[in-house]
Image (cartoon, rainbow, N blue to C red):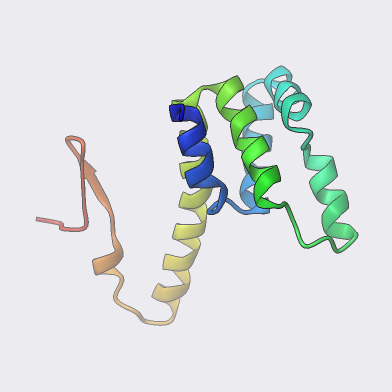
Length: 124
């Protein structure tokens, strides 16, 4: 199994329709041509997702998300594609932290620190 396919299978179950929309918007901001290429390969566009949502379709299937991720990795490369997914998930994480803080929850054990290639939740 190729690295691209491995990441496609791993990440298809965790990305949401909103993540796909955000990623497509960011790709368009970087290069409208690349967004069109992703749409052509995957068959998924921001417009089709919007149309599905307004017609009360439950959302993108795992297979559709796999097609999208495969196209994203082909067009943007694995590193850039995963960076865009991380960016989408970061917004959700920050939103959850804001809710917890507003509810008075101590979130110090949920913080993430990246230093010298090491990921930890310790501040010392």
